[in-house]
Image (spheres, helix red, strand yellow):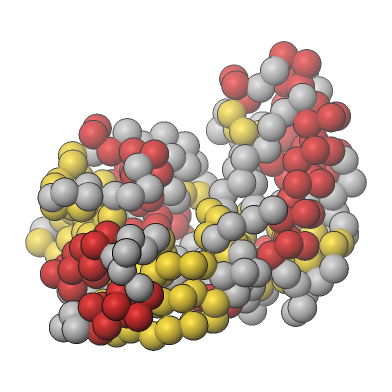
Length: 323
């Protein structure tokens, strides 16, 4: 069986791959939480990325791919394997179409479209993270999602680099086919937008960012909303009957409504707090741990389940071993 040293040596030989060992993953998560990765590597080269995956497979090393870490909870014990990040961030336009690498910052993509008078991404203004992660989780806000503008996605399925059109991506509310195949790696996407007035788009985006920054200050160590909102049509009848019409927005019930009913605001577990002004915002006050964060998330889910018979689902993804 290959040794860890042999695996490290093999990865170190790959051109255009930046490799480090015993890397604190707290540096790469917005929560500022997480133990060390045995190996951490990043690259802007598809060839180097694929070579790293091949080397890890040959040496029987577990791999996890991350973006900007805005939606990750990393175990306090870190990750026993290779954490790999694709950093290519090219954005280009041709008429009403945009081509973007998965490693590009989502806000940079939104700004790029607005400056060129292209409409369709402005409601995503202020959402942190990479484009690849946004596609993976079908990020959205204000009744719109990135999936509405996706024409195609180029990705690696473990055997070959392929491209899917929008229908094949199986987008749903905060879901995609890529979320169901966590070993598939997104490299780039093509988007189709509509022409519009740049000044109008800029005003729309600025208003959205202003509201978002009030709720989720950029300095706050959080992942935005921790739980997905719920579709009213999918709720148990007993739970749906308790939701006031004023709480329903575009057919969805905010998870925050359920959390508020069970007294979530201001709850704490160690250095992890629920905001006293937003029951679906959990943040690291400075000395939080993944164990405390997971315990508080679990406590909130149990409270809502017992009160309403509703199972809240996290928007965050977990890296490493828990429990």
